[in-house]
Image (cartoon, rainbow, N blue to C red; front, side, top):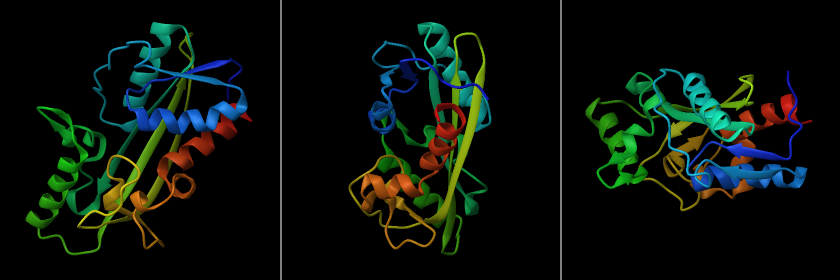
Length: 202
């Protein structure tokens, strides 16, 4: 397992919410965090059919372009009654002519469940894979998962993506109804980040 020993980490994302999550974690360690958006990097085509494959594409593209270690995540929602969809295509389900809209994605997912006649509870799993890539081509990968169910109507104002629709097992609130610290302790991304920190940063 290779350790991170640099001063600057590039997070290969154009998502401000994801960037802020990683910045809050890395800044206390004395690590400066920058993003793909701040370097005007294009978003590479995600052509793999797995979370780890797409995370590797993004991490290595950013590392090659900037000569900085780059961290990428690929995450998504797997809904049991929809055969695991949207899965690696979670972001695609949010695409509209005006850009990504997760209210549209959640509405689309609910409509698909109703159309399928799926009985409640609508079991679902959030998955997150993190890949840390170095400019020399080496990488390390980490995974995190959280199980729960989808609710409708959506609830809560915090978080991003499908957070207002996802209620983790053992909780009465959705991720969007929780404080960031509560959500991070339970979330798929939180689990993957803890594995990353143990593997490469501590």
